[in-house]
Amino acid sequence: MNLNTIHHVAIIVSDYAKSRHFYVDLLGFEVIREHQRPEKNDYKLDLKLGEAELEIFGKPDAPKRVGMPEYPGEACGLRHLAFKVDCIEDTIAELAALGIECEPVRIDPFTDKKMTFFKDPDGLPLELHE
Image (tube, rainbow, N blue to C red; front, side, top):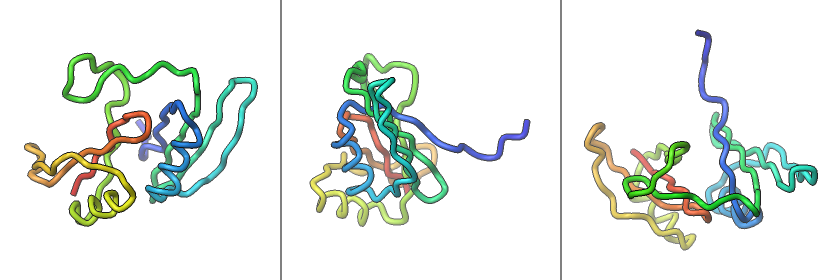
């Protein structure tokens, strides 16, 4: 098998403009390319953060997320995105200044590192992990 790394992760969002603002203006992702696709009634936005890419598909008629991690009703598929940070407290403070709330910090029982979660505009859990 000749797999090198994960190239990108793709998510579907219900409000394209709101999610674009969240990921680009608030979280600092770089726009690689952006396309409206009338034949599919959606927008496609390719973003970059470090070496990772995130594809966002804006589909206003997409079904809502079924459940949250660690809660009943969680469906198969993408559970959450995790971001590695140097200092979780500093990142939480930066998010708070942008009006983004995080859950209380806890220790990952497998890595013994600090972690917490916050949510994107559609409720997709986003993790911070030291």
